[in-house]
Length: 253
Ligand code: PEP
Image 1: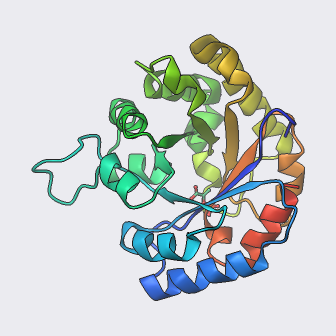
Image 2: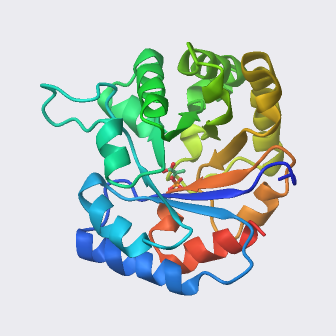
Image 3: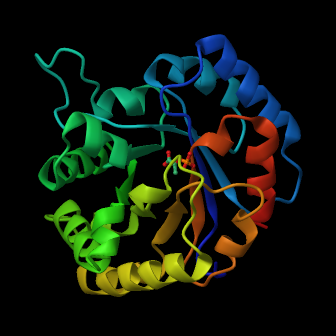
């Protein structure tokens, strides 16, 4: 957390919530938001609830996001959704490279890069997720894996796009497991990511937000966010209930 970067608290609802459940949740979040919160807030419902949530969020400061996108603008790609369609649906951010996409849907670093560039092309802001598995951490390959995901994910970036990126460090072993990286473990990787961003982005690295994700809860959010290079949280499970999500937002200042 630093004054140079506004904290971003991002809720990833994954494959949860019907339209009605999504409306109820977002209304509860809106009702519970207190004046004077410093953090920017974002929610990523499943595609089927984007329109319902967009309607609820109209006129509010909460940003809408999608959980993934295909890289083509349109065409014969059954089942896919393009960044152009997501912009039309009212999205501001798009998550790319989430470990669940990499694990269950085979997204490679090259696929993630194509998605990231397409999201930027559509005028939206990508949230690039990177992070190591437990085997990679135990083999002391964390920094190597994260560096490859970051460099390959950001390949071919235009100058203008350098200011329109968010990175999320999400150790795979901490996602949905109740295991959280200690603030020290997370800060070590976040500082490393920022040093790589300096090489890739130049001065924009100082204002690029690096979120932490992996079992963030109301109990651990404030200590994680107090680290100098942790600029927000990507929250899965704890974003599905207004009460816990609101407490994490409050931890952002
Ligand atoms: C996530 O979905 O990106 C995530 C970090 O999930 P959880 O908070 O449930 O670990």
